Length: 394
Image (cartoon, rainbow, N blue to C red):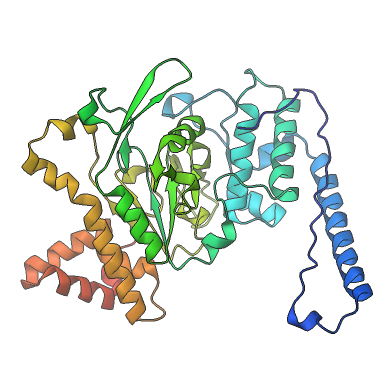
């Protein structure tokens, strides 16, 4: 990950020059001189804009950083705590101040934590401000992002499925016996981790890709551990993040809190949570598959799965194992059903097509089946035609 080179060092200003001289059909009658002039003007505009941004960034002080920060909770409330300054940024205020998407604002929080993590605590205000300036430059000027390999690809996706990692797609605390883990990883502390994958994970991800969807991973665990796992986790004989089937990895630094003044008003989020708006601002074409709903803001987009614990799974008799073996194949069938409905009903988004299989949709489905003696398929059709019957939040 990235480090702050020196505690008291001045921020080095390097301007990224973006060449937008791509030729379209309308350019066919332009002379070479005109094209060169247009490209030069665009380059000058980008350089001037970056210079203006860097001037704004250089004027930042500790009051500016504090204004963009959500006041912290007592330390005892935090499950995840590592070295560095783990402040939560007000992503709405940050996005408004610098004309950023919510995802871009979250990348500033992520880089800020990266840059402060190697530094000793307590930190001076000067060090914090330097890290903040460096994070702003990384995102706003350099346009360098860590979680998503291609944000434009995600924006254009037909649908997106977000997967939690720990106890949803794998258990990284599996027993060392060879029959109960799939891979082992030697850690930097000399210890070994043993990972057991949930049956059907690879077939499901490949199928989502075949259907035209995108897969994103989102874990509450830390950067270094999660990235290391992904280097050893192979999909189609390639590390999963290089397989072409997974478009990004969000880690602990992308968990958010929400100030009571952010939209929706007076509904603060105090728990470190996964916000699907980082991936799809509309939340109309994204769902998340997770075993822990307490860390998810968009509960109406959540497909709950049982917590997978490798040791318990391996100790089960075969008939009981079958229940866990069917979890992800069932999710696959539900996704296929949603896509089929979308294809037959243009204008319907993935979230609404998948709604019968979400936490609330599953509860309503069971009620409809028992009340009317309906099949699951009939209850599913009814909920898709009567969307308001399914709640979208607690």
